[in-house]
Length: 323
Image (cartoon, rainbow, N blue to C red):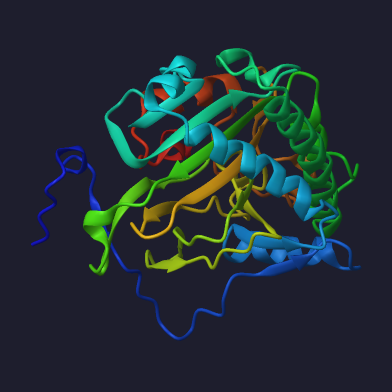
């Protein structure tokens, strides 16, 4: 039994190192610049619900600039950071994730993506605003390209059938900056603290970029966990619950978590692409074969989002909408 002396750690579960068999072929890599990217995206979404995106067109310097601004903020004295909180749900949060008892070894900034995403915080630094704005614009364009390629791989018409759900002027975008600090009491142990507990993302897709520190893990269909090697120059794409429903279960909303290994700080940035609140979510007719039945009851994104806020992080939220 591992006993941690720091009282702040007592409520945060420990995570063992993932073990997986030799059959796991590795994380799928999709080159967005090559012909056939759409088919590769479809295969990855069917198999894992997760893939690494390379040759995406976003300069590494742009990513590093926002990361540097995030590190600068998280390095501030605690009293200064707390001026941008508490997260309710947007703003600065520390260890507490949501309102239903979930905790992790992290601190974070959560923004609603609007014309002024920093309006929910006390931050006024022009450099932060500029870096965040440039990053969001670039990732939004890349997400549109990914969703159009996905539709092409699915042989869907029109090609913007998926992208328009995430790119509508009323679409519900959220952006998160996570910082997982080092944890000296864990160093030398073959254990990690739960940084962010296991969950699926409720939106259509989420796009993640992190520094060179490991910690992200995804769950395979058999329930085993595998580590995702970090890559600062690439993005990682998650299938969300809404996309699983839109494809009638053909794509898999990937269960994932973050383990805080206690040695190196991890900084990640995630853009969640949700549809407009009034958008009805059901399998798309273009993807339903003749005579095929929907596996899900229809719901609006607004209703599903409310259900998400009422649930614990690890709950299977889609089960209440299955037929």
